[in-house]
Image 1 (cartoon, one colour):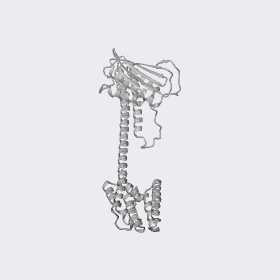
Image 2: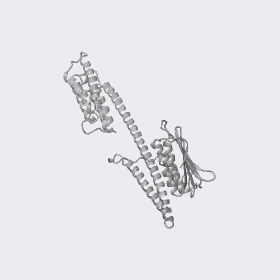
Image 3: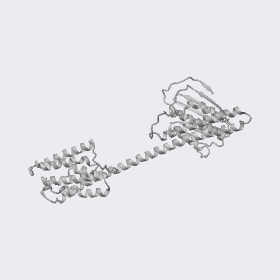
Image 4: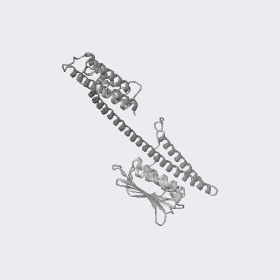
Length: 391
């Protein structure tokens, strides 16, 4: 709850509220003075206006403002003893501010003081009549009740805002976990296989070993670059970056993933069907990560299998399918948990769901595993050449 500032601060809204309260209270004061029973007194009018104008500080110093309003109200009543009891608007606003911005104990004391003090001097008597106390008590109850309801609504709104913030943080953590899994699982697996291939061929085929080491170096460099991009996202806003961030991978980078898969020992076919067109960055990244994760799982769990990547650009959507002819023993169905590849499949499902698409991931009868995703693509993107292309 807002406790107010230590220094005097006020806004245009506070000023308008003070002017409005001064106008209403001054009209009521003047009406009582011209009723024929009491003369109009300049001192009383000045006290009414000054009490209302003090409301500009009601947010930062609500208790002091309430004391000032009560004191000036007594001065006004003593200057012109109004025949009928009344509850000034400025007092209602000041009391509302105390209940809103101060602890319950202080608010309770303010409510108790706000019942008898406004009646002191009214009707020409030092002590007010009993029915005036009842009327003021009803007004105080309505004002304080409104403030309590507003405090409760504010707490509920703050709770909802905090809940949304926590959900946003949790979603960001899941997104970062997906990125880390995709980067580490793919590149580390590729580097492991390349290192093993280089060691096996170092003695009898140095050229193959050299090519494997070059691929190993490129994969390590790519892993470092993607990790750096992810860290830059986490550090966004902390410091100025002079160099622009490298673009996130997309569907145009699938050739590189397929090439790495082939060099890692998995015979991989890549075909593209339909008119090639630019994809939104988030959609392209999702396609890239699905292919990356699927081929990584193939290398890890399918043994000496052959893989096929098929990318289809359709009207209003893009579809990608990765299948292998291995046993797929280590690649569980989407709803099964597995310490080896379950997290990767969960990550793929989350990525596709964020894009509003669908994902199928299941073992194929007779051996192998298939991952297929369909992602909606907004219309209006430029097209390329049609037909199917093998790479």
